[in-house]
Structures are given as C-alpha cells and as structure tokens.
Length: 326
Image 1 (tube, rainbow, N blue to C red):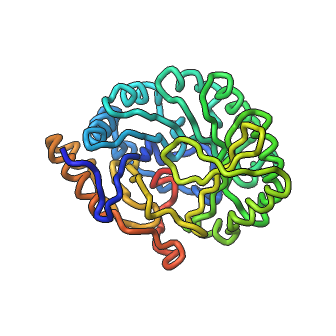
Image 2: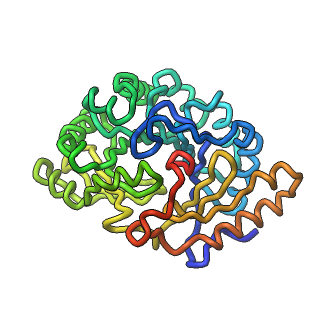
C-alpha cells in the first residue's frame, strides 16, 4: 500500500481530526459570539464512519491522531469514540485539544479510553479578561487542568495565542503558572483564518519579541519535546518547564508540514491556510470500498499545497477555525 507522500516529498503521518464544529465558548478569533453556521448534525460523521476513515489513514502510514473541534468534549460519549480509535493498528499517539471547560468531569475517562496527552487553549489567567475573550468562565478551565494533572495526563500543554495589547502583559505570569503545575507552555502567532482570525491578526505579535521578553525573566536554553507538531522549544534551565513557539507567520514551517485536517463532516483540508477541500462523506455513505476511500485520501494529499499564503493572501480563508479543526 502506498504511503501518504505529497507532491513536495513530505510524508503525512499526522491527522487533526475534528469531531464537532460546535463549541461551548465564543472566542473572538475562532467562533465569534452569535455564530450559528454549524454543520447539520446529520452531516457529521458517526463514530463508525470516523473509525473507518482513521483505519484507512493508518493503513496509509498515519500514526498520530489529534482529536479537535470546535470543542471535542461537547460531542456525546467521546470516550467511546476514543476507545475505537485506540484499537486501530498503527495509531501510536492519540491526543486531544480542548478548552478544558468540561475536562473536570472527563479527564479520567479520557485517560482510560486512550488519551495520553492534551493541549488546552488558555490565553489569560485573568477571570474578567477570560470572560471578555471567550464569553465563558475561567474557574471550570482551571478545575479541568487540575483534573488532568490528577488523572496523569502528560504532558499537559497550555496553548496561548499571543495577542498584542490584549494578553502580552501576562506571559511571564502564565509561565510561572505552568512551572508551578508541571505544564508545558506554548505560544502561537495569530493567523488570518475566518473573520475572527482577521480580527485577531490586528493584534499580531511576532513571537521573537515574546521569546526575548521571557529571556529577561528566565534562563532559557534550547530544547526539544516529542510530538508531531511544529513548535520550536526552549527550556528554563534547571527546571522542567518547556516553552514552545509556533510561528506560522514570522517563521513558517511549511517545508516540514506532516499533517492534514479532517473536519467533523468528513472534509479533508490539506492546508489550514488554503481553501482546498476534498469531501469523503459521500464515499462513506454510498457504499464505496476501502480501496476507493484510500485512493481519495491519496488524491487529497497529492494536492496538498506547498505553503499557506497568510502573508500574501490573508483574506482567502473565510471559514471559521472551528469548522476546520484546530
């Protein structure tokens, strides 16, 4: 069986799997308040359909799957789906991205089902600012983080979208919070994905400035962490704290991109920053063979573009981030 290698000789071994486009928060840069353009529930893939697709991906060499949304924990009985995926031969790494609002009641269930590590989006530790940014409450998120720690999920990575004039006064405090609790800290540059992303880009902050600021407070040394993502890491000397920098704008990583995204309604998006899309749902629901599914996946990967064009064409991706998957 052929492997997933695109036309630029990049091996695709990582799928970002969205299990829902719905979310229980309304972060202004992802799913702004008042958004109602969700995919009809009957269009979303069932557990059986997702299992079949991920099995096809695994047969083609994918070994890593990250479960995303929207907010994946709003999907009914998510641990049951995770147990299905954990049994697929070839899948060696199952992880989860979440806002942690519902994590307090589910961290142990997720660990038992097969999740080993999680990423949590958390842009501020200020309760009032959190509500302004997301429309939600900070307390359940912090409780979810502590539940993840108690359940033994590791590493727990805190993802902070760096926003000039919004949260750039908190980065040192967030680093101390991660150091205290044994979490990994990662900063992400704002990307112009959808209307919310365009608003966030107005607050774009080059992460080189963030790194320089942190270096004034911590003794940083180069480091690495295992994982399938694009973060470049440093470590605080003589401590367990790793700090990662994800730089799609200032220093893009397209040449080493190893991932594609699969939306909750069965669409492959080969690149976050382009609008190419390859629907698979109709193949699943019209009796197509496993060979036909795999050929469709191979076709989509062969058309993965060389790079995003966030700088050149920041207007071209108009879908919400929640519709694509994180």
